[in-house]
Length: 417
Image (tube, rainbow, N blue to C red; front, side, top):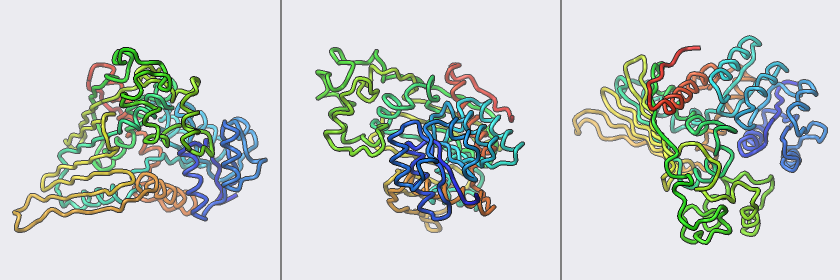
């Protein structure tokens, strides 16, 4: 059974991980599980998995006994905890899509369960596995910029990504998924935690759903984009701007993305992607700012908003001897600039350019799978592997941020579990 892997959840993230695992040539995929029959059969054909090892429910999957050495779970956020615990009890090591769970208590429970059963759980914080962020970490650890004073992280979600994923899509409502600060920004908290190299002590946060609500719906607009009389002038029309944002839609496996198919998909009133962005059932914030303090005396900020043309992250690390400025645009050129506080005749700004890598998360998806397979099958644990114990710390920061936001910005102390 060694060097075998199963996958539960074959949506965008799960299928990408499965393809990367297969393409690595290091594991054999032995079982698949997805609630959508068409998605399941399509993935099974492409990944070469026998029909008898394909399941439309997690209960049926686990009822068959252990089908691989390790399992990847990429299902809706709300079921991560239950499925991860079931996987650990069945004897699997687990690759778990972020967020690990939707409450702090569930995250801690997973970590304790894994430790008790001597099993490995790795959370998919893919940014750690990119050359871009590894370079920033390398520069910090070299001591070149001195002691860290402050880290500023910006998460510019992009209007098209926000409207499709967090207004119309699967993460639009925290009652059925998770808060925006957790669903989108647990990557950022993990980055801040990793780069800082010190424990977060307090978190304070402010934000709201300020614009994408019924209060801001234009007079005369309709409930659905395809029948709205204002769709030609609307900046966020799913119909008029469908070609700019189709990949963010939760479409069936094998969807052909032709204009005809997209139009038909968006003219179905039972489909949340057909809704007006001002008249959906979304409740997650469209902007949020968080301030953090750390044991080493440094501070950090995280600013997330939905109103950007480009989708990118900006990371600024301020030290006592210099600063690092990085811009990470998934699929486009990425740059890291180092400025040292020395006379200009002794130091010129140094710029690192990273390729326009169009693979997932700038190569982070592939790096994650390689690191996970090394960890599970070769016993090689890199310093940046995101085990569940490490992930709990950054998840705590996200939970504290949401608690603070709901409490009007009240500082929340981070207590070690």
